[in-house]
Length: 222
Ligand code: PGA
Image (cartoon, rainbow, N blue to C red; front, top):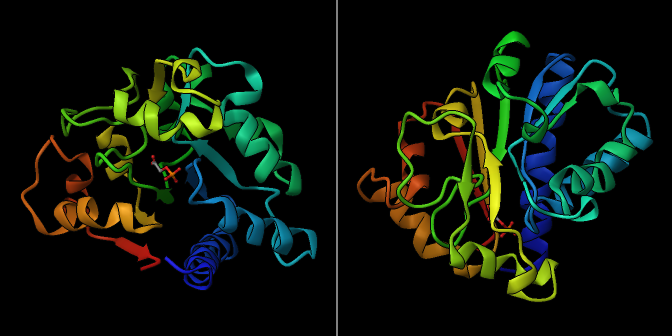
């Protein structure tokens, strides 16, 4: 990974989101958290503040969130801090799976996801669909694996402070998005992404289900 390459894929991802919003201002966006999308959100924030982008009709759906985290460590807070507060999106159009019994029903009522950006975990998870997750899953609660908790421990100081439970869009929810953009940063994602895209489709590597999607864009910085 080079910083230059990372900035390049982040700009491309931001451009895909910006173009989506220009083409269809009331788009439904599926939005990830974690380290990888941070630069993309910085581009989007900048463009919105210089009035090149208008979020007034856009709807956003967080892919997942912790269930047992303090508020400042939730993904709702992450999205608020890194993106939402820099846009003119209405707060009642910023959805989070923690607050709905039927998140898939809410998404469907809004017309379905138009564009969803996802990351990949080093164990192949997409959103918090951990290895072993079935293809026909909708938004559901999960117990996080040790490897995911380890990977996210830098946000919490130590692994024992990382939440154990989360809620996530399911694999079927993600695959229902009309467009999918997968962003992967850093060599540690290379092997699992290669297996996901070129190996068998298997619940052991949830990202491999993406092979079944007709409109997947993959952006990597290596
Ligand atoms: P990361 O997380 O962007 O922090 O690497 C990606 C993921 O776990 O989906």
